[in-house]
Image (cartoon, rainbow, N blue to C red):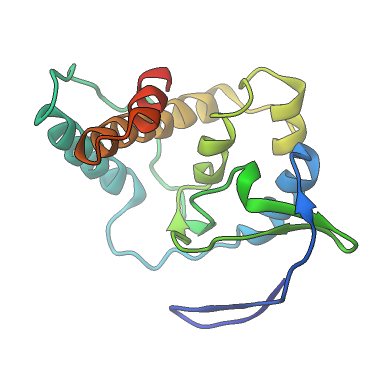
Length: 175
């Protein structure tokens, strides 16, 4: 549980449990965690464009990169509190329900950010993903998620090259 917070820190409760891939419970936890936190003066759509360009440039140092563009409409979206490494290895099931570990990368971000790494494990059209989201995504959200996945794929490949990590190279290729 989030016990307290300020602008830069979260105070969390102790957590015991076992690993979990309970998609519905994880999604419910994430929706409760994702409170509006938008304090960045750069609009979210501009920040995503900068990320796309930055990761494309980083990857281009190692391999040819296609010219990609954002397809979704991200204007008017407020940043929400995001874990940013939200995947089963960071979830545990305990007596009190699901808990989440590893907040190293947590920061305000796009409302669909925490769905990105979930899709490294399940398909976007699966019952598990609908259980995670608690609903079916709209077509507009599908395009937004595509953009976030594109950035994730470019970042994973660039990181994989930089650190000579074949698992991240493969992940980036799959994404």
